[in-house]
Length: 55
Image (tube, rainbow, N blue to C red; front, top):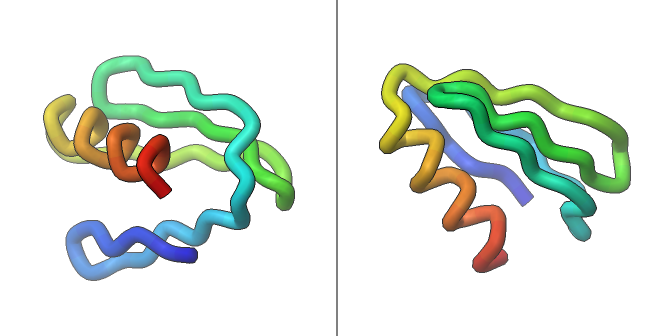
């Protein structure tokens, strides 16, 4: 599954095992390992985390 942000895709291999958020940075662990996503605004990061939890 993937999430599109500003023209780029963030690949997610479910299930997501852990999520850590620090302002605009979201670090999450899925079946492929640890991944890092950086967003322009903290609200974009929160929206991504909501999407991760819902899917």
